[in-house]
Length: 300
Image (tube, rainbow, N blue to C red; front, side):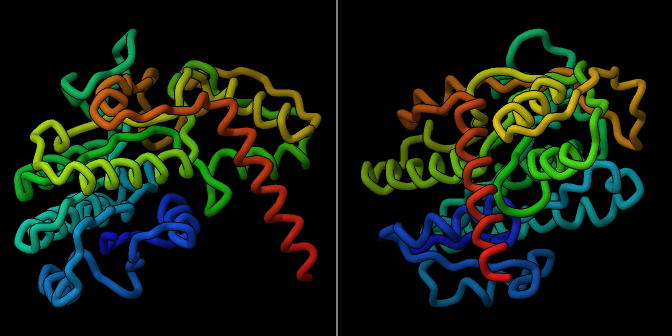
């Protein structure tokens, strides 16, 4: 059994860890901004005292991609300064630091899936802040595991799947971008993968160098946002026509990579992971969303 700290526990991924913890043999400590200010180094130090935390999973992040262009200081505070603080305190407490990053560290100019050694070239403030956070974590704690993921969604929080299910019921047609390709990732799959990683490190009890560093994780396969929307409506039984549009036809404050598919070979080989196909995971998530909706309606 390990003591595991999860920061940003009220977000999509953090919420999935809360649910998984109910059947886990580990002891979890869940915190969010109200319980722990990650930008305050001394507060983190005090929080770690006498808790014997073996693993810290940092799910906390500034993820408002478009707002980051005008809220640069906020993005840096959460995605860089807070990450450095956590990594430093984890290092001094001999805690393995597992930090969640993003496919947005890449510029999207590749024509094949990105591997961990590909050069990061962020094209927006959010991506740059996440990349800078990665570098701080690796610098401050040698037992750091960076997991870059993409297009995260869950039955919890706000995300593309829940938005499409909501607006699809209210509209006959929707315009969705088709010239940005990546891979949707179900937060449950990522959370379960991280718990497998923790078990592997605990079981082997060997400080293998290859256990640490940068890894990529998303579901298997590739999709555009257009493909993603089509599949959401198909599984949900929502009758809404989707029109494919170009990125230039839907301007946003922040640039997005046109191609950000991640190669998962390294994490699968290192930790023996089997990763589900994105459409299969989407089906499971939509089933869970409908189940939660039914429960909520029953309570009203």
